[in-house]
Length: 296
Image (cartoon, rainbow, N blue to C red):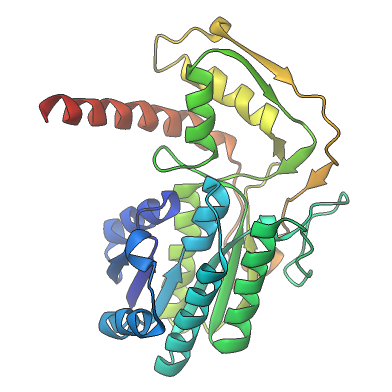
């Protein structure tokens, strides 16, 4: 299949490029986050038409949700342009979304057909983008992910490592719970779906994927802290983790992934098994960037 990947330089996009090119089952066209900020529908339509893709994978909104970037009405409009272009070409629109569309209030995990109910402005815009895709492109596939972490790009792991390495006291909450996803694992899932689409799978609608174990920001930082000392001279005693006692409501943004498992036989895996390798790759990446800077 021909795959058009939009947001190829996001944390997830980079992992997906690596995964797809490693196995070589599909031809991949790439559009970066900056290049996808089209000013007109004509520009977006031209990009889709030039790629002649069977499936368009859009990671822009997921990348913004996980990196803390602003999502705007213009981003939703660009999603509409892409959906219309896919509908005209009879292509598949694969929108990567986020568990943030749910408020997380209550103990139960959210199912695929649960209505988005978050009152956060970013989440409401992403939910609008989902609805635009559903109403515009018949062959739509919306995959909501838990928070994606990676050794590169802007995401929860790189942000937290920067804070840990700066030393001092780091206050983290325990009220918000979720199931983070390593970027390579998310790429495995997306590539697995695309592989089955290329073999004739014709499933569309809402799907979920997250890791199999729930955690909090505080617990995630504890695991990171234990891994950091294996790959650097950093001393765990140079930083103190403290539970932030705030008035935040308890939220559980874990996702039920039954539909993905039943349709594509894709199973969830724990996030903890990825942390040590991701931290190692982070320090290797930092060292490579430093060497490049020294040669400039």
